[in-house]
Length: 126
Image 1 (cartoon, one colour):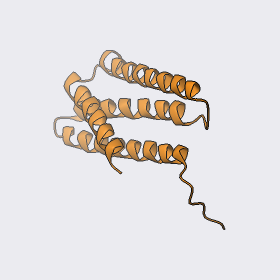
Image 2: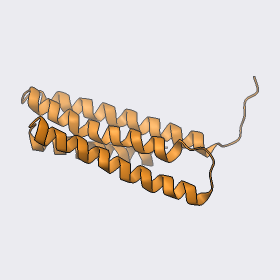
Image 3: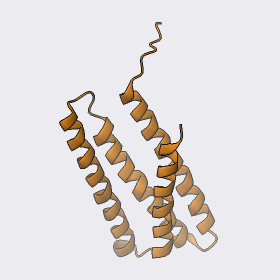
Image 4: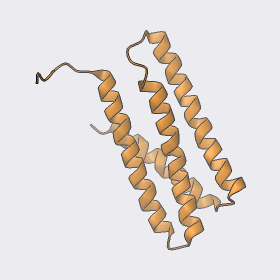
């Protein structure tokens, strides 16, 4: 088998997206375990906050880096659509956690903030 030594930015973007999602899932699970000391509702709320960012990240990653090689204008449009879709998903998950399931808001917001912080950390690491 011939190994290619050519840098592929699309593969690099996909690896970054997978690594970021793995870090977010781990952080959400740890936070939920910590909130389990206060009860199942708090743990579920914290987990849902982290999962909201995780699901939004999955949607945006699919839209942003899933299109292959395209002209710059198409990439920019895909990036904006991905960012918008991410926040729509995050908002919908958080709203359903607060309104439909009536989960405690503080753990939900802490899960969201932790998920975003871990996302920033994971994306700046090499």
